[in-house]
Image 1 (cartoon, rainbow, N blue to C red):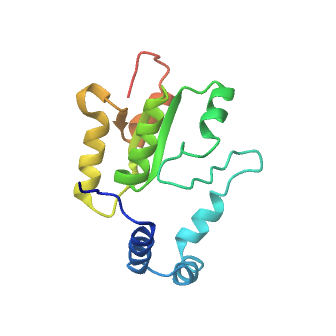
Image 2: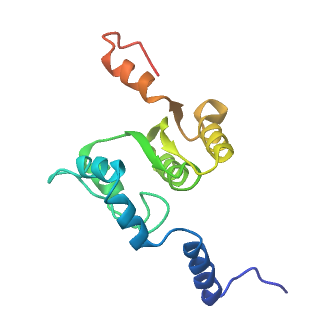
Length: 154
């Protein structure tokens, strides 16, 4: 009998090697403190009464209070943005779909390191008439919000 089970030591080694492939945290802090992204991030800081999700995994629902917050707030539709499209965004949309939420992913507000992954991830979300959710641009979404006609949809 064979097993595909991986020892924890192997997992830790893989994680270390993935981390080693990217820039160090100190290099990121130094670079970000001197660029426009850092200034934009400061302007996007959460307000005192906004919910902040500290997610331990790829999706926004696993081991967080997001689902409870949404239920208590009566929220059933989500606008999803973020990075990376094929990992964190995809996982969050799938988790949300499994919990009964309607999801709209704004295609120009998500990103991937790889254009092909971006294209395929968005296609998978909207496949089969929206199997996991729907995809639209932010401008289409914003124009829908501004439209006086309730029949206008994204």
